Length: 380
Image 1 (cartoon, rainbow, N blue to C red):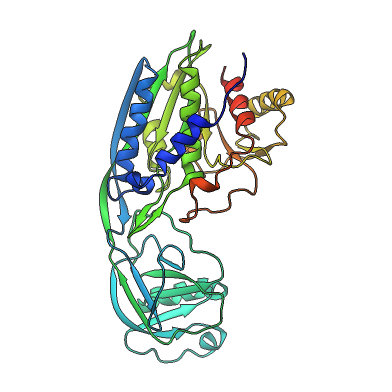
Image 2: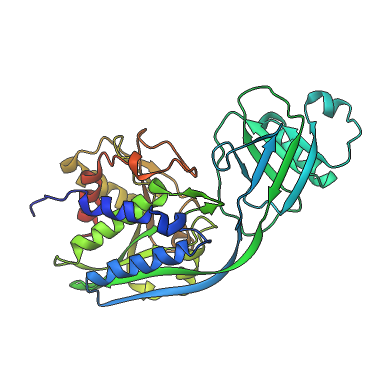
């Protein structure tokens, strides 16, 4: 086979998945639903023998309005300067800061009315316990950028993170957080390309991300528009080729909320899992200059050794090996007794994670061709 594969198809897919119309592929503004519909349309173009959308319901915490944090009269930029924790309940009002430090814990002082507890990461554990005990909001200030995630339950008291590299102690704090539990309908999107054998190789990637928090979009270019785009690129190529095995492609939702889509699929399969040879899950594929890492390689020695052999022809800098971990959509398959590996790319070119700066412009895809060929050769 002559390899003239380029990233034009994948780049277009990545840009589309990160566009404003998909609202961060989360659980507000129909972001996840719009992404599922678009992926279904991409699968249709390859004329698979079967394709479908598997729906299921579960709950997630959403923030339909823009949260606000005003410190000493200055409004902080949500998503960049501060974020509520993903399980923060609604709260509104003006609060008097109380600093939790070594002096406070040595001799706790009387708390004022409408207090908010303020601490740094050093005292985070103690402060969280104290906040729960007193049922008071907690603001943690640190030097690192705020990270966000998705939660399925609301906490009893709100916790927030504020990026503040100075030692300034706030004098006045105003907060407005509007959050709620939402019963959401998730969609797994799948398609089948039949091969000479009915033995199945499953290629997966989660397409959901963190969505929006108020006006701030979390595009999720690396996590995981990159893996979804590579999966669609593999589908695009394999749909035009003769295939030794039946290849099933699954775009999972709900990964960020706790591997919900893949867990549901394993328990309610749309394919005969008794014919499953193995799963290759793609997540965080935007880098590659330093090679890739294979999660569950320690357990799947045969697959890992095969990849090392293929790489002698391809020349990735390294193919790292890790034990199994519950960190992506391969995991529910392994827990059910099926063979599965999770690949993620290595390299410094994309540093943003669960942050608004995880944008398509920063995806350089160094090593994309080699990684693509490695996976293609492995599954053929």
